Image (tube, rainbow, N blue to C red; front, side):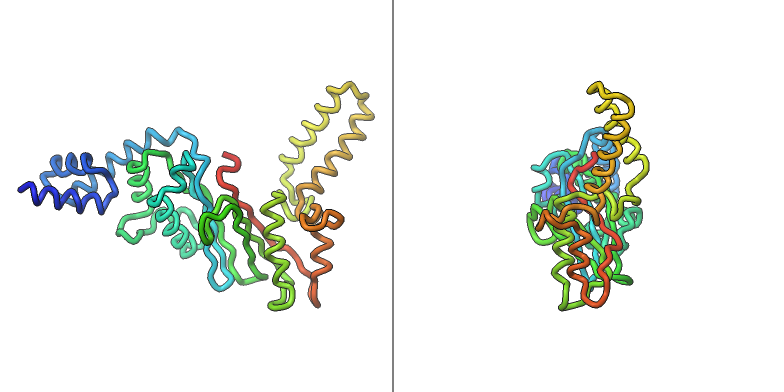
Length: 288
């Protein structure tokens, strides 16, 4: 193979894989210039590189949302550093991933097995991106809100461009009437982004979370030297406050501290009672 042909093949291989010049040359040398075998060689090498990075913590990244005809999908992709989260290759990968996530209805298993525009599967492009950038990257979580019931609303906080940010909340609401009280939907999504509720109602908060919180409350009061009957009395009051503070309908409305979210729903109901059916809030790296 002439030097001109070699350079041309290196260029093609770089375009196909996103891998650096030296690695592409080594792959072509190893496979006697066969592009397809070189891609396979680099994937294997990429997997080896990626596996060394998978023990690291990826708590930066982006949350992306796609909305079409009232249907919404949301996905979080994590990187190790915010520097990579601003990388053009990373952002473009995430954008295409968001489109795929919408088409697969938020099914991450299907997302990873879907072909991207370059003809390779998402999971293979992910490995190549890890090898190219040199950081752990994970497709962490996704969700999908159809339009079979209610209406969907969303809010993007710390937006870096349209429908991409660090915090995104989505809420599905029944009882919203087009051109009547639609504005309340986005306001509730904003409230969720700011107030981080754990559930819609107090009874919906996971039992394990409540149990753990009650343990902490009791231990804190006991350590202050209070007698057992006082500990029990104070802990009941504190756990009730915890349940109110973390259930969406009972939270203090961010735009008017004299009211609760459930009061706002009643005030804005027109003909039909507004009800929150479901919600989700993604904050980059939360819980990692």
